[in-house]
Length: 444
Ligand code: GLU
Image (cartoon, rainbow, N blue to C red; front, side, top):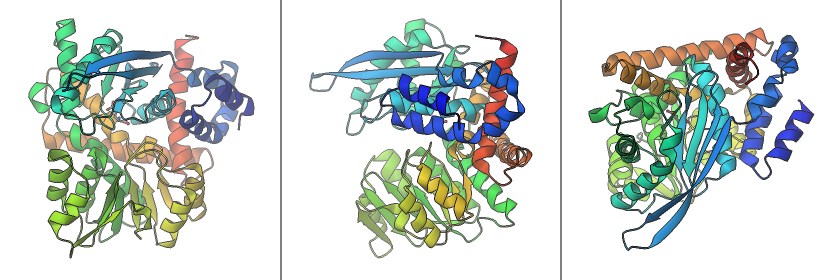
């Protein structure tokens, strides 16, 4: 590893542990590419890539339904725009601070590079907690957030989208306020929009579908498939729901999913319509799923750890650092043969090590969950040409993109002497595309 570069990252970004973790993981795998390309080292490509081009932190004041005033903090880290406008979601969650936004923005650079599409890397969000807030409160918050952020955005500058806590409702309010302030119908300034005002088919489903497509490719590469396999998906948000949907279409049986309060096991396979009703319409806890499904079919385990449920394929799709080394050991013991990260950095470094040593096919988030942002780029493409594609065509494009990313990861891992290593393949593949463009554009 490049100890002095890593020491610099630690020194310049004190306390930002998630960013340190993401930086370390990349540094540990890009050695071979730097050995082959001394010009990257001479031109300090790594040092430059670790330093965001711009970081914006702002105050977000808003009033709740009772008239009480709240102050939140807003962030946008514009990390790297060498491949295109900054692109990446907004996360609204109480855990959000600069370290989280930076780790996500950093990952996004390579993820977006890996898609082969013209998008740079950025991320933003706020420590605002939408849980339990009324629609009006969420709207007022989004309007206040955009009243500051709008000046930094633009279809050629910076294009946000959703992430945890930011779905179509929030994107609508954010876009509405941007449109009002700027007096421009600039559709391509934000993605994940509703279909009635410039959104793209399959964007809602894209991250989850893409995750299932990628894992299907991983299984295929081992002469296998989802067919009849027992699958556990963590989370029950946008990524998890559509991963469950596609896994089921591909023949797998998803027996468990989770939320921050616990997990539910349903040996007959998670009932997707019921899950969507509880989570997307009623915005309730998973306990309500078990109650409605019938406790003879589904068991809700309050406070439980979903990785205790044995499975052959695990799709961590909740949040960062949700699989510890111990969880990984439990998964391996339970017969897990493949892991696909639907979330960003859900597996802790010890967990990755356990999977690697056990020979589990391990697909990192940068590759596995890239379908979301890739479909965002397709949304930008449709907005730019004032076109809208069919669901079937868009899904086919997504499937092709995921299969290309899978192939690129494997080819790159082979080329650099680490056959079958998706982590190295994704990191090197993404890094190389960014580094070559940085070399071409000079010292900026
Ligand atoms: N938040 C998503 C991600 O982690 C999507 C970002 C986007 O569509 O811009 O990649």
